[in-house]
Image 1 (tube, protein in one colour):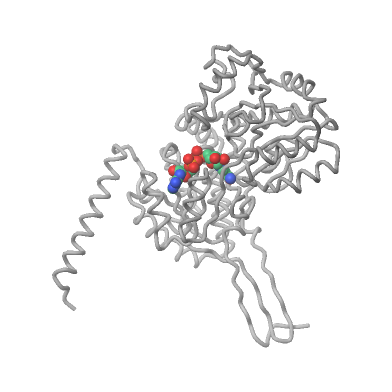
Image 2 (cartoon, rainbow, N blue to C red; image 1 turned 45 degrees about the horizontal axis):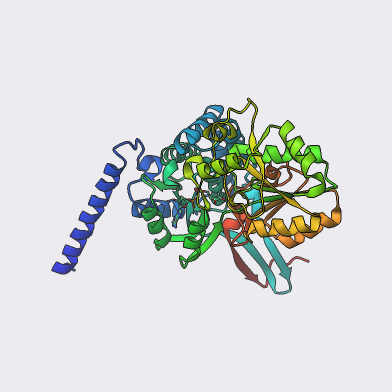
Length: 474
Ligand code: NAD
C-alpha cells in the first residue's frame, strides 16, 4: 500500500525529531560519554526502552540456571577489589557525599548479600482435579530510579534482584551520579556478555535528567516502576498510573532507656550515625534519651568519637551553615563531622566521627532528615514519653527506628506503635540491612508501598498455571 502524503511527512518529522534529540543528548554530555549502546548506554529514553524490551524477549528464552550464571557474573565483577575501590572513590568524588571505606562495605554487601533466584518460591496445590502452581514471573521492562546517596549500591542491588526475577531494567540514575552510573552499567553489561547473556538487559540513558525520568515513567513498554529516593520521587511514581514500588525518605529515631547497656548503646549509635557520613536512609538521625541516663549516654558517646556542641551560638551557627530553612543544604549532605565542624571554625581532634548537641524536640535537627553526622539529643521524662516523641519525629514515614533497652515490654511497645519497616533492637541501624544483623541486604526499602526490604520476589508477578485432571499421584 502506498503512503499518503501526511503519513510520509509525519514519519519524516518523527525521524528528524529523533535525530535532533540524539544530537542534543550528545551535545548535552559535552561529548564526554565514552560509552554507547554496546555498553547499554543510549542517547534517548525511547532507544533505551526499545533495546531493553528486545533484551527481555530474548531473556524469556533463558533458563533459571542461565539467570543464576548471569547473576554470579554481576556479583564477581562488582566484588573485584579494583572495582569496589573505583566505585567508592568515584562516588565520593562525583556526588561529594559519603566516605570511601564505608562505601566499599556497602557495595560489597549489595553484591554478596542480595538474594538471587533462590528467592522465588513456587506454591502448589494438588488434588482430585489436578495440579495448580503459582510461579513468580517477571513484569518485563522495569524502570528503576536510583538516588545519589547509594548510587552504585542501588544499581547492583536492583540489578541482581530484578534480573533474578526475569526482568530487564532501564535505570534512571541521579543526574549527580551520571558518570559513575554509566561506568557501572558498562561494567555489568561486560560481565553479562562474558556470561553469555542477551545484550541490553541493563540500560540507561546517557544523560539522566528529570525530563528523562518522567519520559521513562510515562513509557508504554515500562511495566513496573521502582523508585528509590525522596518524597517528590515517590509521589511521582505513585501518581504515574503504573504499578510502582516506592522506597522513600526516613528520619530514624533512636530511643535509649534506663535499662540499656549504655556504653554499648553509645558505641552502636555513633557507629550507625557516622556510617558513610550518615547518608543511609536507615541511619540514626536523632536520639531520644530518658532523662536519668542522658548525661552518661552523652559522656560515652564522646568516648566513641562524638564532639559535643553546648554553646547555643555555635549551634545556631551550625544550623545556618547546614540548613536552608527546614531543608539540609545539598553541599553539606554526607560530609564528615570534621569538615562540618571546620565550617563553624572548630578544629576537631582526629577520630571525631559525629557531632552531638542537646536540643529541644522542635529543633529542625530533630525534625528534618539531615543525612550528615549531626545527632541531636532530646530528653524525655520516661520511656513512655521517649517512645511517643520517637513516633512523632519519624513523621509516619514507616522507615526505620532503633531502640536500646532490655525491657521487653518497652521494646514491644515501641515496635508495635512506631510501625516502621525496620526496627533494630540493641544494635547499630545498619544491622537492619544485614550488616552485622541477620537477613538479606536491600538498598531499596519500600515503606510507602509496603514491600519492605525488596528482593527478587518483590519484582515478580504471581501467575497461576492449572493442569486439570492429572499429575496428582497421591
Ligand atoms: P532524590 O529524590 O533527590 O533523587 C532520587 C532520584 O529521583 C534521582 O534519580 C532523581 O533524579 C529522581 N527524582 C527526584 N525527584 C523527582 C521527581 N519529582 N520526578 C521524577 N524523578 C525525580 O533523592 P536523593 O537525594 O538522591 O536521595 C536521598 C533521599 O532518598 C533521602 O530522602 C533518602 O532517605 C531516600 N532514600 C531512600 C531509600 C529507601 O530505600 N527507602 C534508599 C536511599 C535513599
